[in-house]
Length: 223
Image (cartoon, rainbow, N blue to C red; front, side, top):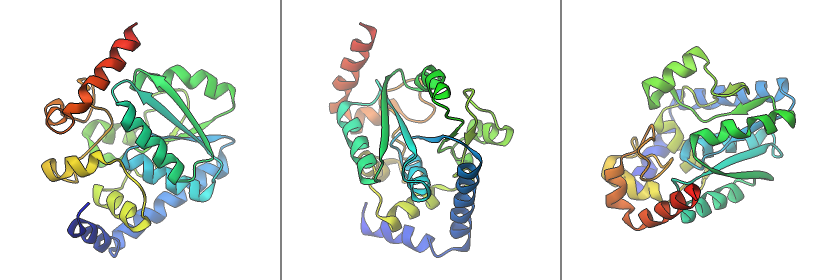
């Protein structure tokens, strides 16, 4: 990230709205931790879940951080995500591998058996109409109730928090942002035609050398 953008994000932390949303997120997290027996964090490794994990771990360092290694993310990207988890100080880190979005649902029975009764998810209403409606209607994708501490955050809030706290983030953001903007840069998956966010053509320009890794993983999953 160049210094101009870093300073822009630092300036944003001086606004009243930013601090109000940070305090609201902290209050949401505190309430969930107080009312749940075994909550956990769904961690994608992207900017939103990184901020959310940092906020949760600040209040409860030993919470389980659960990560799905998608076949649509190359191994070197997953290695970066593992490094981010380590830098955040995650003490309990569980990684499962498979077919992206469906993977969480497949592992919910085990999580329920272990007593997990709430999951922190890094959804923001600003991201899309679908996510805004899901948050407004409190629609959960599994039998485990979700909590969305960042629901009202903007993309400026997220990057401002990352910069001011010195949090690590995926290097792909630095490649994508100059082309499509810091507000649009997302790195959930690569070359994934089913992704809610993402553009295969942008992936092809910026991450062409990763394409064969994604292809090999997909081929292996079918075998």
